Structures are given as C-alpha cells and as structure tokens.
Amino acid sequence: MKQKKKYEKEMEDLRRELREYRRQGVGLYLDGKSSTPKEIARACVIAENGTYMRDYGDNEGGEIRSINFEFVENE
Image (cartoon, rainbow, N blue to C red; front, side):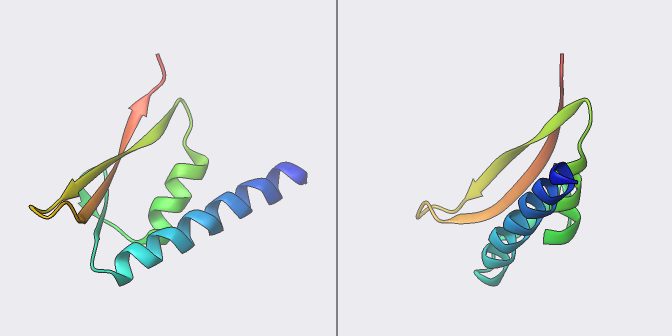
C-alpha cells in the first residue's frame, strides 16, 4: 500500500509540474507525439524495463519551448 501512495504522489507532482509548463505555452510530447500532463505522468511512473528522459527544446532566447519525454530502455 505504501508503494502505491508513493507512485500516486510522484504522478501528481509530475502532473502539477507539467500543467504549469503547459500553462506557460510549452509543448509537451511523449516519444515525439503531442501529449497531456496526465498521459506523460502515467507513462513515467509505470515505465518498466526503462525510464523516460526529458529532451528540452528552447528558442533563441534560451526559453523552454517544448519538452519531449523519450523512453530509454535499460541495458
């Protein structure tokens, strides 16, 4: 039961962070496809045999314009 609460907290924390990015106009992607904070958070928390790595895209001013979560398999 404690493990489930830990995952729920991780997922909610990530969703909150991603909602704020989206509010600021940052594009969110999961493996290259436009996605929602909920879909990304769920994928990151339940990922098996790997993890998701963030790839930030910025503009000429250095502001974050997109975040792509790419799955990376464990070796």
